[in-house]
Image 1 (tube, rainbow, N blue to C red):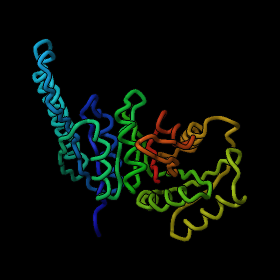
Image 2 (cartoon, rainbow, N blue to C red; image 1 turned 90 degrees about the vertical axis):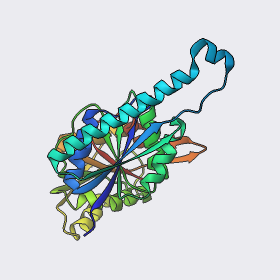
Image 3 (cartoon, helix red, strand yellow; image 1 turned 45 degrees about the horizontal axis):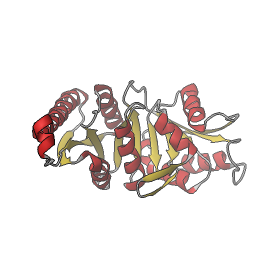
Image 4 (tube, helix red, strand yellow; image 1 turned 90 degrees about the horizontal axis):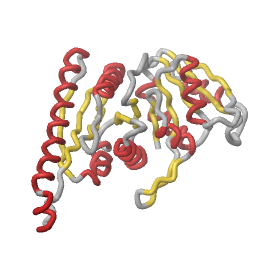
Length: 279
């Protein structure tokens, strides 16, 4: 049986991923019995030819210094990841792409297409991490699991699926099989007052389908009462003790301007737990 291949893009500019994210990524990889490829996105900057700027600021030295800092960040992240992987027993290999930070997201997106799953760190205070995550979610054709950068995750063997019967939700369930098949319990959750639903038996029908594949499944209906849907879903997952939330990623892109659905926008703005998004 082939091992699950998991990509772990690591940002180095302007900020970088943190130790907590590495711990979380290794926890997911161990749960899924997968192999990690850590892809260091190392910043490279074109030399700016400007006589006045070079005289006043020594631009070449500034560029060289920033580039070296990025390399050091990447090397430190890899050392830490591999040290922790030796303890957890997760196989890790690494690669590096050196490019301008403006194309980090493009390079990560292309690399993602050669893996089964992508793990992305997300912090509300870091726009560069969010930009890369958005690009990979909507451009890779692969499921993406968003992991908090700032707090440790818990148990992963209870998975909650946000279900509304839509195409993207169905795609998310299919892409999440790598997670669902390892879960001890799966809960299908339908928010009944957030949008018009195609029928009243959505949760039961999906639960029956997944049960026929040997999964331990329950289903429930909840009301959002006008609250932001991303918060409603994460609150419900926390209430029932689910460690992973699975949902479809709603959005369209044109010239890198993303028009996001409310749930997706809310998750990207306030991630509290591992969320598997599929588009």
